Length: 105
Image (cartoon, rainbow, N blue to C red; front, side, top):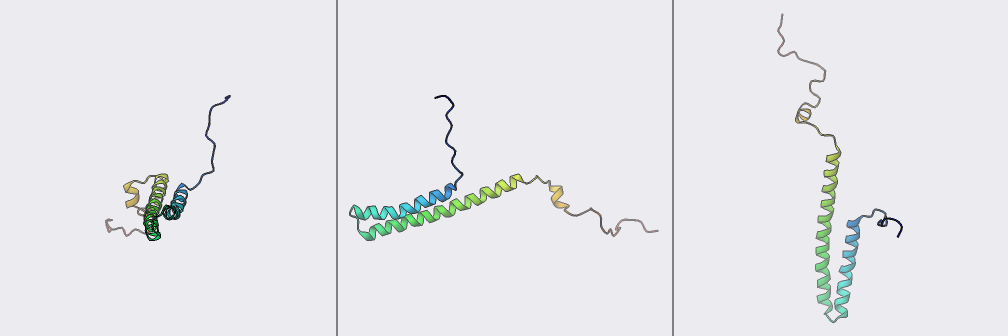
């Protein structure tokens, strides 16, 4: 070996979608294997439906965590604003003044 070992670069893929695809494949494969090994078709379908339910719940949680991570990343990239900036947005920047505390001649 003449150079350092470097991992092959793979194009960036959506790993969440990959996980969901494999889970869906398993939801179909498991009942087929169960029937192949002699389990009743009703029990195999029931197992497949249970796996599908779990996969759907996991998909929802995974997508929710991805959205939250994206939201947090977007918030981190925004410039920080102090409490003073938020409280006085648009205030004291010119415009009409009523002159509330000015003495009247």
